[in-house]
Image (cartoon, rainbow, N blue to C red):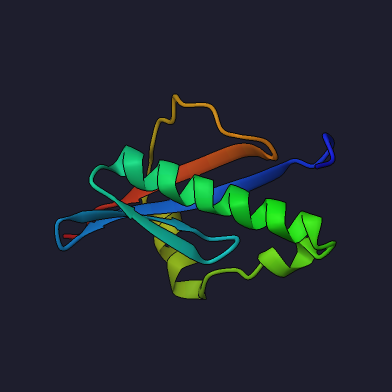
Length: 102
């Protein structure tokens, strides 16, 4: 994979039905976990796999299918999360926000 390839992602993290979900807004990909950290790690790994496969196929643009507008609106209203973990290349930066349902 090209070492210059760097992708920034935004994640909406929320709890529903006792499970945590990480939703990558750039790719409209959702993964679950027992904790917010696990949901984030799972969705990041899936995004990385999608990016690698698309790059190998020469079709990187195919992974960029943004989430519906409602999720972007929720992201804009959610609280910033402090991410202390590092992320695998080519993912350069992740901004995660937790949505708290009233």
